[in-house]
Length: 97
Image (cartoon, rainbow, N blue to C red; front, top):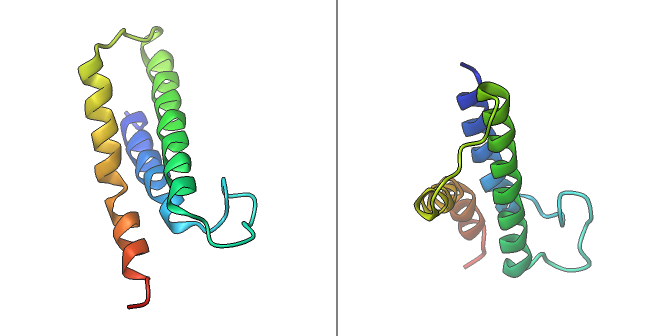
């Protein structure tokens, strides 16, 4: 029963991490400021890694991964986008005016 909460917590952290961290892929310090394009690429990578975690948890819990239609993936994409809103707002709120 802990798997859903683990997945939701991991998704919240993964969705916000690219917007909060100044490091590229959380390992390398960029020469200049990390741009929006790099943050979006990291966000997409976190989305894919979270989906892989979800698939692994589903396989562990049920023994198989159920096939999904396109609607499932669209809803998950936008849910991940909503999860990233605190990080985006934090990033935009830190800019000097």
